[in-house]
Image 1 (cartoon, one colour):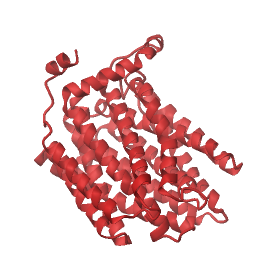
Image 2 (tube, helix red, strand yellow; image 1 turned 90 degrees about the vertical axis):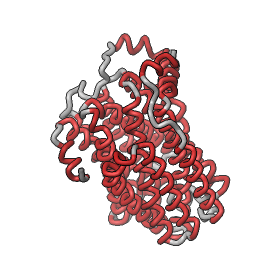
Image 3 (spheres, helix red, strand yellow; image 1 turned 60 degrees about the vertical axis):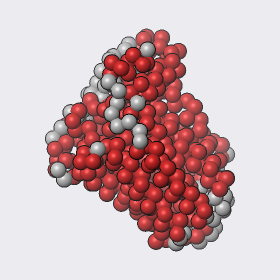
Image 4 (tube, rainbow, N blue to C red; image 1 turned 135 degrees about the vertical axis):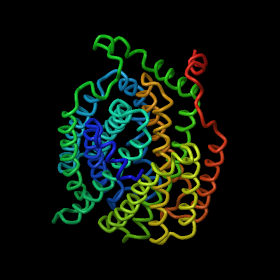
Length: 437
């Protein structure tokens, strides 16, 4: 089946249609918000001038959520996921307004970091709820196709939102460099509000979880969250394949994160005009646009090719392709190399992610899916923080080193080799239960 026919097939399901619009609007807001934050934190000429500065920014924004994420993750298996999406986007809308107010009043930078942290934390919670709720609105045999279409459409929407936010920073007249983020944040607020409105078209129980608990039960069980998260990890370990899938996802994200940090610095110091926030942001927005092409190609090709060669082999092939893209950047730091690498490596990461999502959904019981994707998000954040820390240690201020880029090629090859020999089928449910016990 083609991408268009796959989409047409799933589009007949009302739950899929609504959930897709919710995700597209929400992640479009994510993209615009990320441009606003990047402009304020990473492209302001007075801030984030070295890899260490960027690492500090990433750590402040993501590390605390990595610590508190496990405590909210199990709630995805308890609270109505539709309500999580509705209330979460409204909270993000309020946070964006607070950030804009803080910027206009020249609030201390720690205040901005705190508000941005809260907004990004809610975002990860929402994505976990949306992913865990997907099997509730489509047939099981459509999961691979849905995972190729919906998350990838969301990622493309994020890139489009980022492009809109980036364009607005150029066309809104009279904004100084320290307020360029305001236009992007305004578009993010509109999209978050629209996503909240659309999700009200779904029933409050439409995304699960299947097992309902009263408010009193939820309060009584809160003290057991760490134990339940450990049980979720034990479930993934006993089933084998979901845990290995999370591992390869985290490794790929770490390598991608290193290129991401390098791209920020290269956009500032090589492609853009040093000290000019608008020029640097324009160069980086172009990189994001080329990355969106890679994400889109992954959505088109994954449903057609992954079933033929198997999800496991598809992930291996995707990681190997990442090595090819990274090799181009090892050759040169010029625009052609960075933009080509952006397309290829983004395709690699997204194509692998589609298969990883499907493996985790398919091989994890519904009672554990929320915890599985909470662990997924923790691994995602740890990988990006680790990438920033490693980048601070090994990248020069220009963001480019032939040796570092070549080392990433070797790392991609090593990840592909390790996952190639990993088990391809999960342990049976009875065996996993016995192992967990």
